[in-house]
Image (cartoon, rainbow, N blue to C red):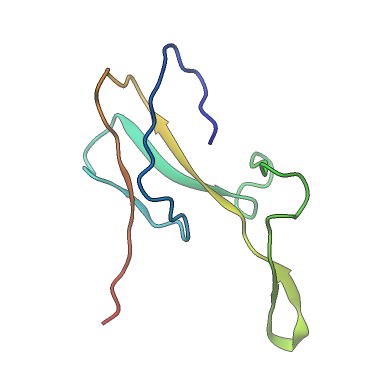
Amino acid sequence: MWMTDLLDSTSVQMYDISLTGNQWVKQDKNDTTYNITAVSIEQNPQTYQSPIPGDALRQTIRGQNNVNTLSNEQSLSIEVFNLNNGVKKIAKRFQQRAT
């Protein structure tokens, strides 16, 4: 976890670190005080930097015709604007239920 541009002490609570997938949603979709995005080595190769150099975090996936590809390493990005003391912002992972 990297935090930048902090002007005061900050407390972060992580409840469940289940980061598989990139289907993240805000608790209130109309809240404009923060943005949730996912950045990845595949979609953002010019700006995304892996926390560990090289391809150590990218699994090799054997595809059809014995072609190996590297998995797409991703990170959750939360950008918060003018957060007041004591205010919480939540990112939830959206999961579709099997029917």
